Image (cartoon, rainbow, N blue to C red; front, side, top):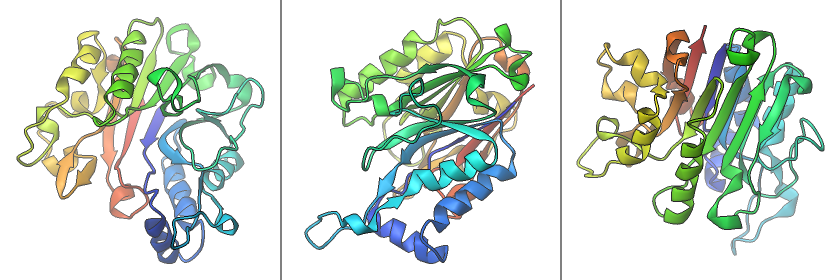
Length: 293
């Protein structure tokens, strides 16, 4: 079982325009991103900060409707052509399987599974209203898969939860997001929790910043869940440049994680950061790929 996690952000309009010129066509970046994802033949692709649409804006900041660009649909359609089912955090999967939600400018979670809609036996979605109950449902998505690739897992199933934790400036939504994560830690069955946690331990940030979010990550580890990348590299002493998945003002940090439910570490074959996504301007975060036996 191979799982690729990716945060294809870069939502700023001028960056999108520059990337179009770099890739020689509108949507070129999305097509290049899809081609790169397929190189590794993943069974599951989990996206965070997956922007549905983008627009150019006039000098007053007003959206120019004629410039609408269906960013997520370009990637989703290409993946569907390769046999993937795409589930979005704001689409009601039970009503319309494999649908892309029609909400302007939303930035969502998406999980693409190699297989058929009937291979997805449960979808865990939250309130879609960005202000509902102090929880941003667009930043949460879970799916439970049952297919040939999951036969050897507990009950023949594997749950994938993709999260995008709000940053520290939004304390209420951030706390509620971590609380929702903590409630999932005691659930039965095999599971992989992936995403942009906007958090880091002492070793996971460079420079003089006296800030650590390890207290928010510790409850996950205390419940027996395993940091897949750290577990794979605990005897390898990786260089900082390999550890970090994101850079801000030249300060590196590891924001992107895959946590395995108790017992799954015995099935972990590998976990690697793939920095070429970021270095080639396909994303602003490095990808994380994990392999389970």
